[in-house]
Image 1 (cartoon, rainbow, N blue to C red):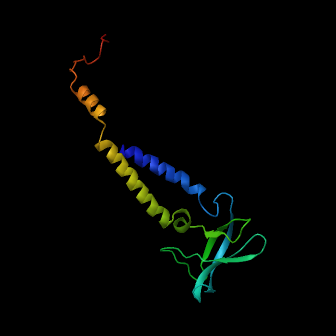
Image 2: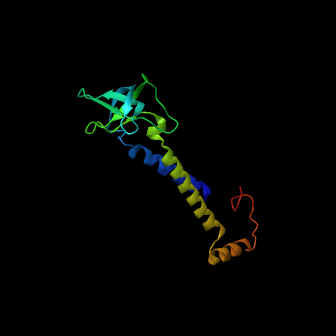
Image 3: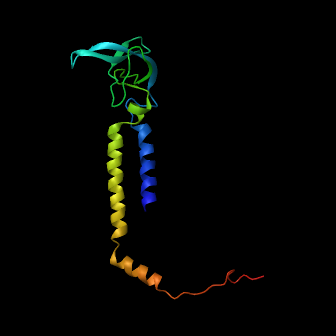
Length: 152
């Protein structure tokens, strides 16, 4: 039961990943981006932003900050953006685009709950199931020949 829960969970998560990214991994456009130092309007301090140019020759900036991931000034990265909405952009990086800490945390919680559910199902069987199992275990043992009825 535990193996089945694990296999189902991992399969569902791997199918969820490619179709849940924003910007979409399949329909997006890739561009080269570079880290630039700019004034952050929220904190009024200098911060590294990623600047990229779209196919229309328009320049956009976005904040690439992510947990355990920092970019430096002048660092070159690959940017993924939606052509219809170029402001929706992300750095094409495994950590931060494909794998996010919120999803990892929720996956751990969901897996723990599924695991507890499977434990509950196995540890507390229905009385009919217990009776059926006892009857199966107490059945008379019938010795069979090694090769069945097929002897040469």
